[in-house]
Image (cartoon, rainbow, N blue to C red; front, side, top):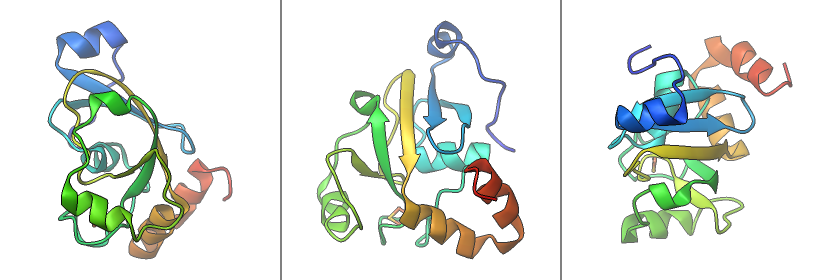
Length: 138
Ligand code: FES
């Protein structure tokens, strides 16, 4: 897949201007260049991360919880804040994956919400078995 490299060490990723994004429920890790969004990181490693509007801040199906590393991300802007208001099970760690930009190297730990996962499953019927297996429910 485009953008996927072998997972470097923290030092290697910092030198390369990359951030490491890990997925709590799928066990995936991907290195992406600073400037990428969390949704782009998900797409680079095949994480089942929904994006009904295609990443233009027009839905809330790319909702994730940023379990750690939130300080590496861009701040929430008004449009994202408005859409998060309609997201299921929002909490203090909520972000829209298409709006959260990696601003510097480091590690970010992400949990894809159930709503986002289900959106992805609906959009990728031929890949459902793989996605369910990643979550240990296949
Ligand atoms: S994909 Fe629709 S708001 Fe992010």
